[in-house]
Length: 635
View (cartoon, rainbow, N blue to C red):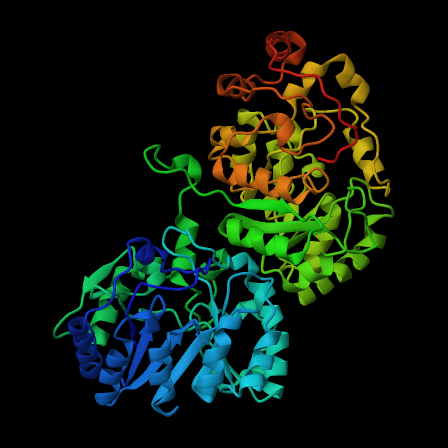
């Protein structure tokens, strides 16, 4: 097997595309001479099929001519397409019988521009689905096969990372959630007479025990397909595969065969082969290649703190709040910010336990859960539970099972460590985050999360304390998530009661710190917030960032404006970020020198006057303007 990429041109913008580096270099088309040399390579290597890729291969201006050249040599032609084909290519494809020409079309729900290819090509078409999020729904595939009389087969692929991880890819922490969802669908597919196949990177351990027994031949590929494929680029260079393309490439030889070239690439990457996508792969004895090599190599990427200052800052990934807006709003969010969004979080849709926040509108929640392609996470986040953990945990676990099965929920954030342990025991495939409400501020507390939580959201009282955050980073082996716009005061004595009252179901509980802040308004400058223009001061201390504000960002333009500012690093003032009751209410300029000082001051407010003087100076110079806002806004 080898793939010939005819062109880097494409008429889609898939967030998971691992050929982005080739596209960013500019559109290039393979010359006829290079294509002939590639066909020579296939023939002397004993490969009987010309697999034509892109970009979108049918956009090559001479696609019919090139495809016909392969047919004339006795090769079968297989085209990997997005289905948005120009008319000349479509006419050529439908003029050849299915035994000579096959087309694999990677589909996305609701892409109406693919229907023309389905109608014209019929059973020449096999549907493919690239899975880049655990929140995928393959059910529409069977509908398409029936409606257009397509080939009764499906090809599933995992979205793998490019070498620089600049694309959206399926992180291995979500593999088991994907495997569980696929297992249920595959039963229905085989009952409908549709046979599945699996591209590279799938591993047996991602599927529930026993679920692969009924797949027959298809199951044999799972775990064994990660080896040099050989992708011929439009310029004639050859790479082991696109995800590893930036790491090694060779010119197309006039005499070598596929076996020789594969051996050379395999030897080049042999030292990484034992890594595996999971830590457990190092000791696993299963007959498995341990998943995608490119995904495994991501475990070796340096933390942001080790990146040279001469290099561009790493792209930040965001966990953002669900607000009740129509599906079109979320489709726009995905279009504008999709590569930057790790998850959209929402309260656990259940009466079993509160979310730790006031009730929110849910008019559009069902359509969001069923149809949005953004990864979803849930909050199980009351600061106090209504009943003992052992009594309430089974119902919460069942609610989470349902959400994982129906909607592919990607993770859960939990405020109670004992409850998190019970969820971990019952649902080991579900990644868990220790909520900011666990109030983890010291390294010894972080150690208590071992084996239970995959992600830590540090306490708001250390959000602006570089030394404390560094200590947590060193003590915790998982991911660190920092909240940027929750404005609670450091160590606020009213905090627990305030969150408890919010969890009681009150529509708008009052701010308990209002009287304190009326007396000492300068304390608003000490809250746990970081402005978009100051994010770089915390680089290296977080793996991902969280935007709070399911109440304050409920307005659609406000949500997009604030998210855009944080993603792009565009300056905002503290009153614009959608914080909570301790947020600054007046417009105030926060210069970087002042903010950087507050990250190293040790919070010795009882003997320091810097923030008070900064606030008073702002008042005297007119940088602050009196304004009033109702208390009780959620962080």
